[in-house]
Length: 111
Image 1 (cartoon, one colour):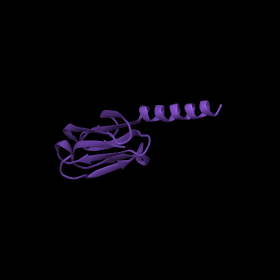
Image 2 (cartoon, rainbow, N blue to C red):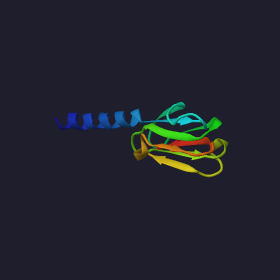
Image 3 (cartoon, rainbow, N blue to C red):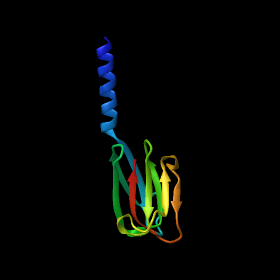
Image 4 (tube, helix red, strand yellow):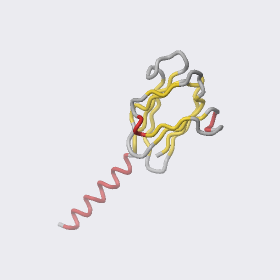
């Protein structure tokens, strides 16, 4: 009985790590309502990241789905260059963050 319990707990732990954390956010260029732009999603395992560039630059972001200890970092230049200008943690899900000028050129999702 003890072996079955240990085996079941091990399988659950491995399965939950393999599933990872889904993070999704919506970005919109200047003149488009927050949440009405492009949705980007990534399924991450702990320690992994997703990165990409926006074309054109984006003016707003809203995290639509986040699990675990993940965050989205936004940068003013391609390929995550120029330093982080905005960081959204998982507790900001549903909150729109916008700028009066489109300044988000690239992103990184980190868990």
